Image (cartoon, rainbow, N blue to C red; front, side, top):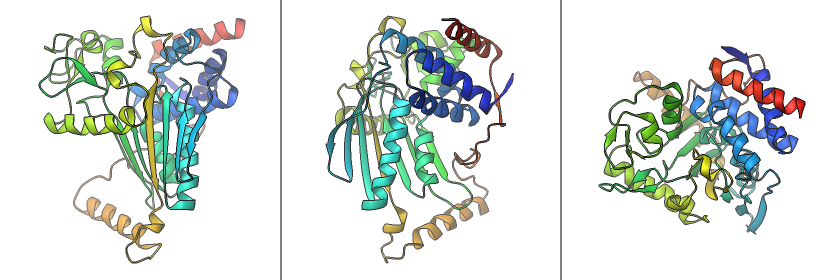
Length: 340
């Protein structure tokens, strides 16, 4: 079915507030979910909202969590998320990172002891819409084995980049597994079989069963090279920021761990392109980036993220495709909030 951005924002915000989340944090979280839906990556949008609600009510995402400053050197800021939802925490961390990069040319903001934060491309796009280059890394429950192994060691090790460009930013957003785990969850919800090569079961055997894949393993993107990149992301997030390595993070999709904070880590690095040109020209980088995009299109290629609506162009009347069953479930939950 079709719903408007405004309808989706209103419903998600009401549901999140119903768990005890403050109104501003609920709106910031809802915005990230809606953008994911608008971009066509529902696996990181409303599909996960029922789990966010259940985990928050159970205490796995403490509704009263706050961002606590651990270290602030100016260009480097380290925050403790107190176990809270990652969406509003990363939204605020991105604002801080952009402001500091404007002052120092570069900034890094680490958010540890946090929760799942949805589509990393949203935060990369937010940085790019402010004229900055944004690099975003995160971790989560372990689903990738070491190359050649059969036990979960790394998360999907997602990463994203946002690069400002006249006419719309470049957005790179990907998991370093063959497919994102949220996509597996979407297949499981719909009862669909997985394509070959996406996943392994808990014994390390290739499987097309989405439910078995959710409790099993995902294949790394590009084999050994993909594992090496995933290891790098794990080191930058779980390793440097913590407090847990991915192998020790409670499973997001497990009902048995809903009351346990995930305690995962995110890292943002933001660069001011006007301060990076080797000749000291503040406009040269932007011109070269534009030239790179034009050459890509001239060769028949597509600039990454060019089909995604800019975060600044999202309209309340824009339509989203929403599964009927999921929307009905969320409306039912909303009626329970209203009657409580």
